[in-house]
Amino acid sequence: MPSKVPAAPRDSGKVQHCDVFVLGSGLAGSVSAAILARHGAKVVLADAAAHPRFAVGESMTPQLVEWLHILADRYDVPEIKSLLSVQAATRDIGPHFGTKQHFGFMLHRPDEEPDPTEATQLVIPKLLTQAAHLFRQDSDSFMFHVAARYGSITRQNWRAADLAFDDDGVTVTGQNGEAFRAKFLIDASGFRSLLAEKFQLRETPARFNHHSRSLFTHYVGIKPFDDVSRHPAELRPPVPWHNGTMHHLIDRGWFWIIPFDNYKDSRNPLCSVGLTFDERLYPKAADLTPEQEFNRYLDMFPAVKRQFAGAHRVREWVSTDRLQYSSKHSIGHRWCLMSHAAGFIDPLYSRGLSNTFEVVNALSYRILDALKDDDFAVERFEYVDELERGLLHFNDLLVNSSFISFSHFKLWNAVFRVWGALITPGVMRLTRARIRFQLDNRNPQHFIDLEKAPHTGLWWPESDKLKALLEATAETCEKYEVGELDGDEAANVIFRLLQDSDIVNPTFGWKDPRKRFIAPSTVDMIKFMHWATRQGPPEMRELGDDNLRGMLRAAARGKKLL
Image 1: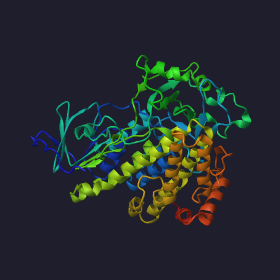
Image 2 (image 1 turned 180 degrees about the vertical axis):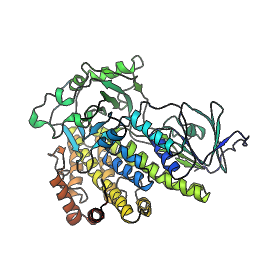
Image 3 (image 1 turned 90 degrees about the vertical axis):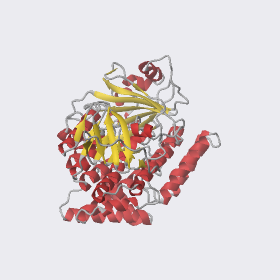
Image 4 (image 1 turned 60 degrees about the vertical axis):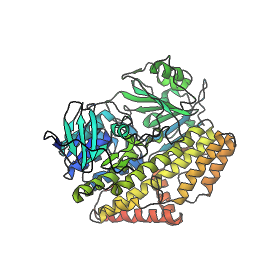
């Protein structure tokens, strides 16, 4: 990691001083600024654009919900809890958010009607949360103003022109000539990072196996897939497709449909729409506009196209080149490339915000400690670099395997289960830490202990077995990709791995390939807790026992956990 950088210009007397300068006021930057300012740091939060504004990354996950709980509780920023659910967002921010009751997946082939038996769905138990489709122009603007309310100095439509570092800090100069002197810089600006450009941090090509590009915008008038699928009632999933995030799978790609009008109190007619696909198989058409290109692919899939009958876009299209990018380092002398400024894989599985807030959690207390100690040694921040690298690596394995599997439903059905089986223990370890924090006089050591794991960035980083399962899945899908295995053979390998794995929860149906719709009921949740505390392997029994005992103790003390 670089430890020395070019010297900054001497303070001319016109430079304004702060502790932390945050580039980028999306959720990553605004939540970071709110946390730091809440704890007494002098923060400047600047962005080249202004709120409200368009952003993607709109679909929530159970793990994201838990990280929001942790950030709100650990750093005493209760406003973060306004993002926890569709009910909270509607109440505190506005009636513009959709509900996310499930992850839904339907396989499509060109010029054919989709087979209703080639579909999978994971329903998020209402007992845990009613997650939201985040209307990002509202959620991001809300958190930006929270940061301002806690004392962050804000600059909108303010573009940084130069970053100059020395041993004691960084001078950030805007294109308007305004300059700030900070002890630490957080770059949460995304792909077009001035910091990444300055230090030539981007790896060319990106180190990831996965390849995709994307087209996306917002529409009005999108029809629910339930209304246009033409599938008989007995073959439909337990929760309507329109009540969650719809993934229309194609060979090495997928359309997303993320409605904001599917919650009873929403008054937002918009729907987020996108197509993400392998740019090697689907190269950009130089002679087509993004809308023409999108419609060309829409024409290939009749059931998806029916959702768009009579609909029209309300924003300009965004058309990307390859989405995947990576950086040599995400931590250096008095700087951090945060989350999407450091690298990106793909929006499949909606991991972007979960990963982002895990990084916010790891970075925030380190900055506050460094400010207190006046010690910004790079070594104090090295875990953040390890975390960002691990999060991207393991997501790359999973997403690349998934894209490979989209061409063969049986194989996708197997990979779907590997992904689904990761979620529950990943959330449980976070919930355990949060319960311990609350029961132990808000002792942050319980969150620090989360970092003491051998496989940083894995959803359950303590688990050797989970790492082995994911890596074996990736290897099997790659063998299918190069023709060493056919689709059925590859699927059978992964199904055997699932059957033989004692860490895969048997009560939800992950081990049964015939159960395509996973919708845990309250009874299923009770059965799962019995398995987790009495029948599972030692690492699962420990997680299950700790969570159950902690929840009972918290309830006895009148502490609200959800």
